[in-house]
Amino acid sequence: EVQLVESGGGLVQTGGSLKFSCAASGFTFEDYTIGWFRQAPGKEREGVACIDSSDGSTYYEDSVKGRFTLSRDNASNTVLLQMNSLKPEDTAVYFCAATLGAGFTETDMDYWGKGTLVTVSS
Image (cartoon, rainbow, N blue to C red; front, top):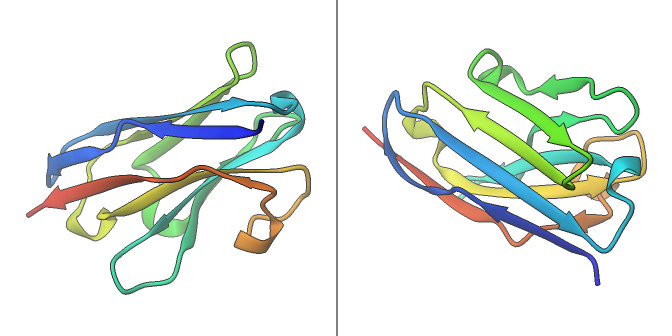
């Protein structure tokens, strides 16, 4: 059974930090690009960051560049998302997703986690 399980969400004050983890099982993790998406209340889901399967290169959406850092450990089938200098506009449900393809849109992703909520208080 394929599983992507996110953990690390919660409530944090503006300027604070959180670290997410995404634990994968049921597929060949090292072959998949892993992405993080988020969905804020009343808004569409958007891609935040992703990390490539082949060389570990990363992509960040403009609003999180310099604040979020993504890393992966293929030995433990885990991806970590370190989020610093959090802002109220970062409040959302965050989802981990995996794809064998090259794209980074919702429709490109093969597997999804259930999501974890982050609330950044002002």
